[in-house]
Image 1 (cartoon, rainbow, N blue to C red):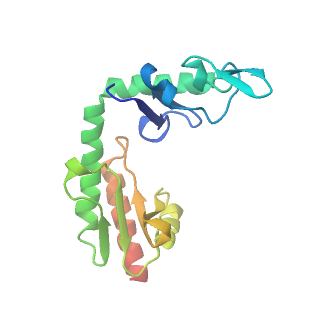
Image 2: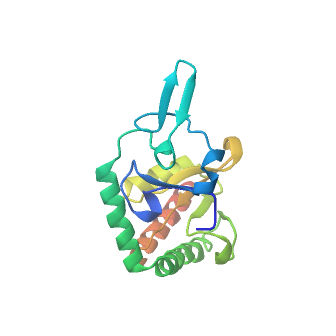
Image 3: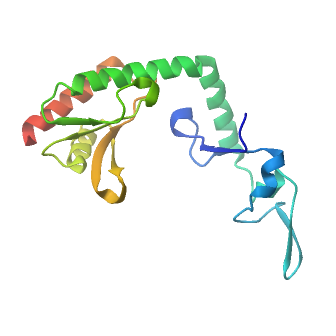
Length: 189
């Protein structure tokens, strides 16, 4: 893999179930990490004051394995591989670019993040000048559109609406999102 450690959730972009993820630790680097918790076969308590960690990977396995989650994640990874990560990125960026292109024409819209698609993901963060992101999220939700309110400057100093399109979003869904944003802007702007 070319790294010492790698961790990521199995849901969201990989489309796996919640409660499962991946943790990779290069064998030579395992001694650099001390597990926060122990359990199962992760360590042996030799006496009241001594603890001996198991060899990796057991050192990091602190409880029962989530077999249902593992099966779901394995299925999702096979599906993603069948579609091809590169093709998924192309599809995601196509949808994100459509959203950016369409909403950038709406007066009072600010779009956050790099314009160059090589420097960004397909997440589109935006705000409408006179409308709280919380209101935008609520209005869109009422119309069956799921977006999220997120901090774009730490500590809640600046919030935005985050749209996170994925390969399963269709062009007509972009049109629906954009029309709803226009309606909100007209209603409150």
